[in-house]
Structure formats: structure tokens, C-alpha cells
Length: 153
Image (cartoon, rainbow, N blue to C red; front, side, top):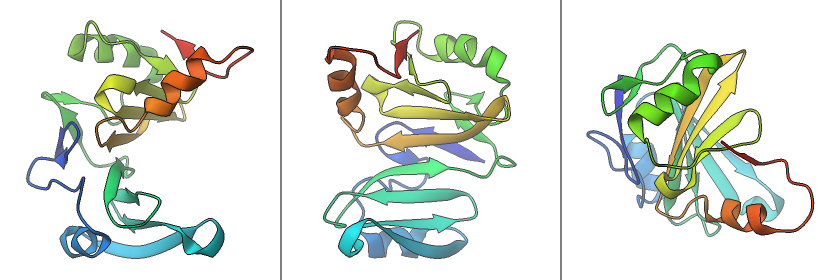
């Protein structure tokens, strides 16, 4: 079980801000490093339970995403993984009654908390915790003129 700490990672490991080498050293069940984009400028490290994401210079971990649906991922004693999509909004509102939720239909983001909850097959299948300001680009997208894939809840 992982107890999420917003802007940090999870209880026991503050992955946000670690170097890639520190992340791999501290990552349980480390499996593989992927390089994304041109010239290998963006990397991510993956274990059985989560993925670490880095800044554009690959110097510092900026987010971790819990991906293994059989594990328990809790925030303030609320288990998030496997919550049915139909119950997700009410569970988030219990945790953060005054926070705005943004969705694109698969992701439910709390921009101010740098928290993303991903739904797959009608239930929560992933949880991402980012550094402070990780989702600030969402604010810009919401204020741009024209249609958006994002909706406020």
C-alpha cells in the first residue's frame, strides 16, 4: 500500500525532486528506463507499481504515477485505486470539498493539488502525484478561446 503525500510522492519516499539515479536506487521493483522524444531528452523509470517522470533536462523527478491496479493507493485514508468511475467524483469531493475538478473524460485532475486520477475500464487504474504547479498548463488551456477537450466539474 502507498499513502500519497501531495507534491512529494508517498509516505516514506519523497520522490519529487530526486535525481534519476536516486529514483532508481529507491524505486521498488525497478524494471526499465524509457526515453521519449527526440534525442532522448525525456526519460521515465518504471517499476511494477509506478512510473517516475522527469523535468525536460532529466535532472529532477517532477511526478510519479501509480499504475498497478492491484495495489492500494490511499490519500487521507481514502483508497483510490479501483474506485468505480461512477463514485469517483463523490470520493474526490469528500477529500477536497472546495477544489475544482477538471476532466478530459479519462483523467480527473485537481490542478492546485497536482493530482491526477486516471480511469480505465470504468474504474480508477492510475494515480499521478506531481510537484507543485505540475498541472499549471491546464489553467492556460482552460482560458484559451475555442473548444477544449477539458471540462470543469
